[in-house]
Length: 445
Image (cartoon, rainbow, N blue to C red):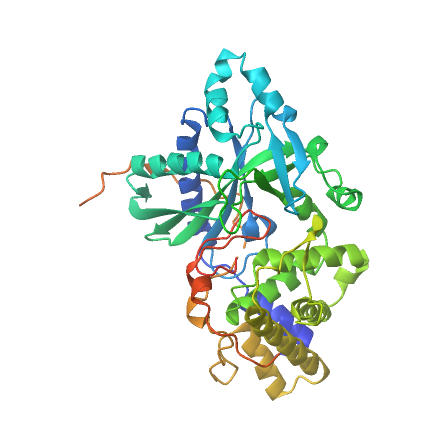
């Protein structure tokens, strides 16, 4: 019997925010990851660039909730003479950088063993020798298409066949798996750069700390722009360090993500939530995260609502690594109003329950974590996107070995309800840091 709100938060973490079939899904994912990676490593030109992967997103941060049906994988690309890439901030696009390959090309033009890379670069840079996002992605799209064709658009794991479909979505190359395990993987290419190549402002440079590497992700502009030299910065490793060791921080993030999923607020991306907490890590003393989960949850729900508020000057969510970029800029007023009302109401419900967790208040809190209350009442739908609810995030067990893969057989023959936005329902969206989203419509990731 739950006796107070803190007990309820602990129970919610144990009962509702859990991973089912973790090992089975992880083994299957590892098999697919290894096979795709091996084909990329065999591709002419790309073979010299591919230098490892990083599991990121909810799994990498240990922030995923619910089913293990969505993975984000950075595929690191490192050019010969990579440290000679001249990185400049893109003044026209906050949070983005330009990659000047002039010195790299001057050196490798004289190296016979790097001729395939030089030939590739000649096709994917402009007349200023700046690397072009769309040209690089077009090349990788061809590689991934060939990869799926060679695999017969299927994979066999432990004697069971799963069918694969591929689509390009934002910066990600997404593979949807249908079979005994159904999930999707975003393969996100990322140019791996060193700390010496940072172009951060002094304050943000301080947050980067002792991290050795960061990435430039070929994220398309909105709308798509041909011959685009602008790449989105990504600081996954530095962010992981900033969130590490903050006792109840990750529990609070998981609870907010779970509430978002249950309320079907797919326009609020996981990276939005993560960014709210990154800013709070800078503002709060380390001891703050040792407070009870309920206190952190209530305050963070309030912070989130404040940022979504349509005030005369509008709330905004600055990108942690370049505050000139507002991560809420692409949201419509209806979307913001819908989410503001949702999270402000949740804040009110939790504050009320914290003062008096009677049966009615407990049922209201319960409804925030599940689709129905204790007595089985159906939770009122709070979003016009309720039919597009997307599953949530958690970290796979790193100790699970990749499952053996057999060769593939040949294929057999403020209170207004936001209005539905059909364009939003159809388009692919990505994590605001440029490394996912993920890929269904619209994706909460």
